[in-house]
Amino acid sequence: DVQLVQSGAEVRKPGESLKISCKGSGYKFTTYWIAWVRQMPGKGLEWMAMIYAGDSETRVSPSFQGQVTLSIDTSTDTAYLQWSSLKASDSGMYFCARLFGAKEVDLWGQGTLVTVSS
Amino acid sequence: QTVVTQEPSLTVSPGGTVTLTCASTTGAVTFGSYANWLQQKPGQAPRTLIYSSTNKHSWTPARFSGSLLGGKAALTLSDVQPEDEADYYCLLYSGGTHVFGGGTKLTVL
Image (cartoon, rainbow over all chains, first blue to last red; front, side, top):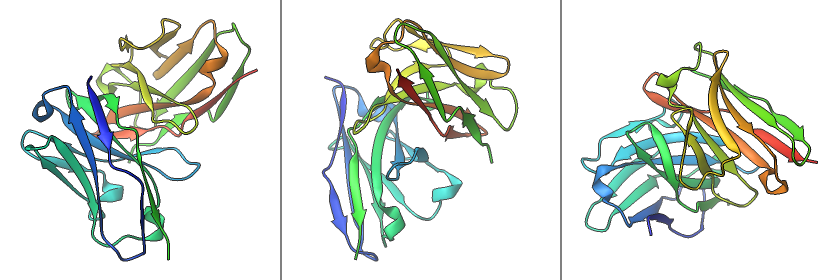
C-alpha cells in the first residue's frame, strides 16, 4: 500500500526540542515532495513548508520561516520536522502530505499531535 | 500575501446539490492555481478529492466535481449524502507557495 505513516503524539515543555517523522512506503520516496501542514485546535489547515526527498530542497512559508527545520533520510524513506525551542503556540496537529508535480497533494499522513505545556 | 476565501458554512439537504467556492485576493483562480479540494471529517486527516481544479483521484466519489467558475475554484456536490458532512478546504498554488482557504463547514440536514 502507498502510505505515509507519522510518529506518535508528543508532549514537551516550552523551550524543549522535538523532531517528528513521516515515513513513506509503497512508492519511490525520492521522486516526490513532502509537505508539512499545521492544524491548531479547532482551526483550519496552514501550509508550513515542503521538502523534495530527492535532494532536500526546501521551501518554507514566510509564516514559518526560521521556526522549523525540515530534513530527509533517504535510507529509511522518512521526512522529519523539527523544532529547536518549542513554544506553547506550537501545540497542534501536524500532518505530512505527499505532493506530485510539486504543486498538488494526493496522499496524507494520519497526523501527529504535539502538545507544548509547562 | 495571498488570502484564500471560502464560505464559512453551508447547509444542504440530503439528496440536494451544493457548490462551495474558493477565491483568491491576488485575482482570478485559474488552472495555473492548481486548485485542490480536500475533505476533513472530525478527528481524521484530510483527504484530497480534486486536483488541478477539475480532476478526481481514484478514491473520489463520482458525486464530487471541481470547476472554475467566475474567477473562482468551485466544488460541487450532487446527490449529497449524510456522510458528506465535513469541513472542506481548498488549496491554491500562488506566487510560488501554497495557501489554504479557511475552510467551509458543510452541514447535511
